[in-house]
Image (cartoon, rainbow, N blue to C red; front, side, top):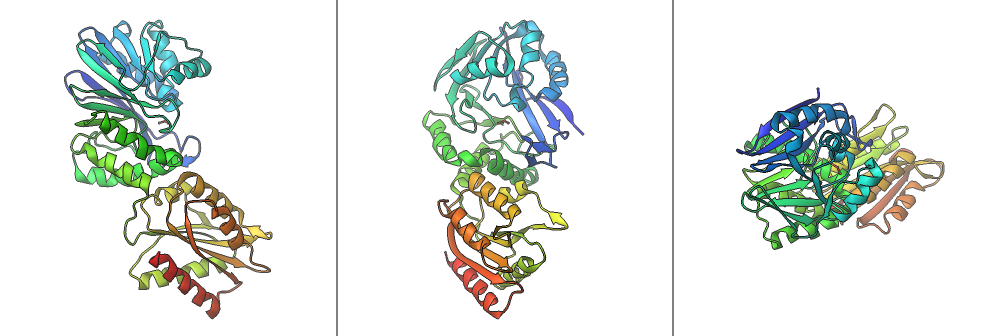
Length: 401
Ligand code: FEO
């Protein structure tokens, strides 16, 4: 069930957090049974309040009610927009209306255009650059641009005296943790795979920018003791933890022995080959993580993509279909290359009835990707000894790459 909660982070900074369990598909595409939070923040000062982001439009009424518990509309003097995607900007029109359009708005130059085109808003606007400061109510807020994480206008705010870093989407994750902070190791352990899935599906296409933009913040002297993202857990016990994971996931640093398999099978031939492959991997002491796309079951693509950033190797098994790639696998490969394009060893198995084609098409699809295709093993119908031998060789190549 969806809910909203307001949590003081200290004597003057507040989190307003929506737990969204209504959205089944984030961005209309990524399956999120774990839900997602929208984290908005409010800073109260003697001269008025600063609002950092809002929440998805669906929750506007709850959000504004929570906000009015903290401040009155005329106390809000500034609004900082880290990111214009509607899961954070959706309540802006109602907020601007309630405040008679008086707050000054701070954001990336492109945000001004998006405010006008998305919501017809034309507030007093300050286009910020790296290091632009808002000094207000005895507080210093410094802005840094983080373009293409994951939209062009994304940015962060650092409060140097408090050492708080508000990061928008970046360093966030899926899920609706009961905990607010990373104080408990178990909460972090539960959250980490949901953050990795979020990373792959939301940020993955722009992962090179993670390795560019996050270290830049350190060069600017940003060393937060509290990381405040727009989704998921807040970080005060170990703020470096989520930063380090993001950098590792962006680089695709593998976890030793983590092999991920995804396969499609129409009538069980590809599935049988995958079964043999799993046996071989087990002989090597590896228990692969397996995603199935068969007649009675399809795993969620978002969960599959979420396992790739720290995988050691990937195996795809597929049926051949109408002289080419079986369509669910074609779609899967497009998503892999778009969202999780890593230099990792890859083995492709293709089952066919008349002529091998799916394996060749997979090879063509991965040709310009970062993946290291170690082998394509195609076999006709039921897997025979020759097919088994080829798969064995393929596994050896995969694990020695
Ligand atoms: Fe959480 Fe890109 O929006």
